[in-house]
Length: 261
Image 1 (cartoon, helix red, strand yellow):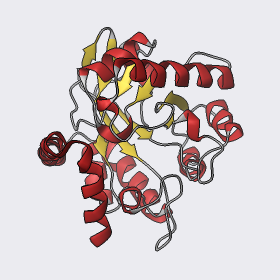
Image 2: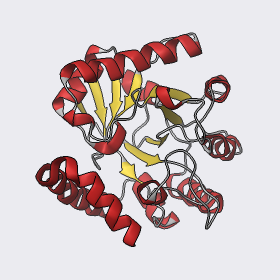
Image 3: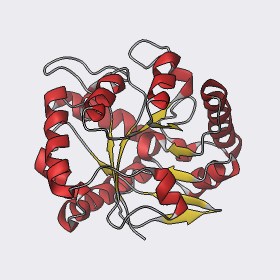
Image 4: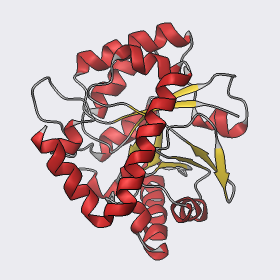
């Protein structure tokens, strides 16, 4: 079975600083609102259908060619992104790092509850958003997933069964811990349309949208065109090798490179 999921982060005024996480790394994934609006227009034309919900995917009732919109980190600009989705009566998936809620630049709990109230899917993005999730111990992984699930369930008044991996660094331990914490679906950053599973938890890859991703490229990815997915998977594989070689030094090296750019 296949599905196409796109992952966005924050929106930012052109020339301004991103909300949520700051710095060169965050800026590389932040779109201007008008750029995001153009993405939605081209995606709508390319797919001819609204985005699906992970609930239908998990239940096996999603239509063939289903695609989804996801938003990581819980930046305050998620409110504006949701407003743009509302103009099309589209649903999104918003993944929240619970320790960061009510922090400057991030959503407040009232915002999170409002997103859920109007029909968007709320999921976990861990508690503290570790830079290298796959490097955490088993105990740390269980704590990040279990505690975030409990906090979100209390805030929303219902269980939360979906999550996304922060930082893009997935491992089998990350997936097994998510399943042990009660999550039934887990979004990763692997650019793949093919679904996987681990310990009963459905694994869903995603196509990462960056600041320089064109609307045509985003639309092609949402429509399932092979070329953008293959290109991003090749780049993802190279970055994965660099992460394994550099270890904890990788994030510092990446930030320095982005700052020079």
